Image 1 (cartoon, one colour):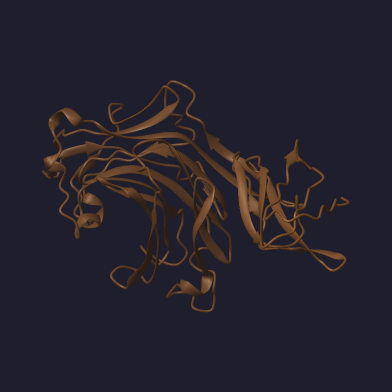
Image 2 (cartoon, helix red, strand yellow; image 1 turned 120 degrees about the horizontal axis):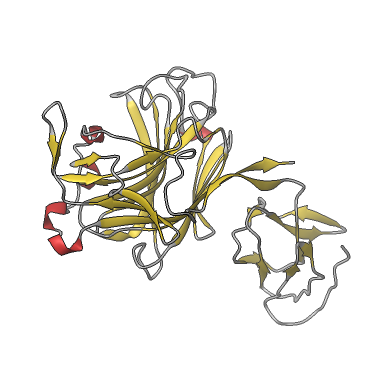
Amino acid sequence: MKPVFLRALLPFFILTRICGFAAEPEFHTGPAVQLTFPTETGKLYQPEVQVGDEWKNDGPSIPGTGETMRLLRPAGKYRITNPSKEWVLVWADEFDGDKIDFTKWEREENNYGGGNNERQAYRTDSKYSFVKDGNLNIAVYRDAHTTNDGKTQPYSSARLRTLNRGDWKFGRFEIRAKMPKGEGIWPAVWMLPTASKYGGWAAGGEIDIIESRGSAVHETTGALHFGGAWPRNVYLAHAYQFPGKDAAEDFHVYALEWNADEISWFVDGKKWKTRKKDEWFSETAKDNASAPYDQPFHLILNVAVDGRFFEKTDQKADRIPADLFPQTLLVDYVRVFQWAE
């Protein structure tokens, strides 16, 4: 591609891409430049800067989200190219039918509180997980439930997983979802190893893509759990603050990119956190820097109630008025991409 150079005093330039090929860019010199270009989901976009007579990569390639990207760069001459690698869709559920696809999902049933003093029973009834109007619904009701062991939980909800139906080592995991916002309501999208080769939880690792803390819907959190088996496990947690709106007002696109060297979190196309492999470890594989995140994991979607996630808050689901139930997590789609050369 032969760039066109325009000299001017304006501080920005606009570069457009059309129909998957690079358009001829226009350049304006100045103290800073803004690159603006449309993207397609599943494609990669590589910013390049001219250094002498050569074009060199300016930072890592950027996965497309279907939205317009805007990048701010120091003054210079830039272009956007497509690397030979790209994300290829390998698994998806768009929830366009009228029922859950059980070739992709399994409903779990348990009453033990997740090891976190949670107060919900996960049930397999369609009342608590169903597809409607193009969305997966995971609904929490104030329905008490007692299991055969005599244990009673005051709330009922659902937990779905892709175990042995969708298991992946590395990739991009993208979820478009709208959060509930009641006190003590804990929606989560996360991952566990399918057949942990490093031991029990959390020696085998856990990846939390989305966790929303009840009425604190101005932020979402992500985390990694690793190290040794409980109680020798450790974790790294981090939070993203939504600009202006909260996660319960509208749908947002949450994504996680995972490879052998790093794991990154995104909201609405913006990368907001990256963890490098030198930040995690496995007690049982100390010579393997990528462990425990070098094995297949599966996805889990659930909504919990109360528990240790709320220990530093005053939130309690019992304060939610009865007419605000069900509290529902809406999921528009789940998509999984992997690299293709």
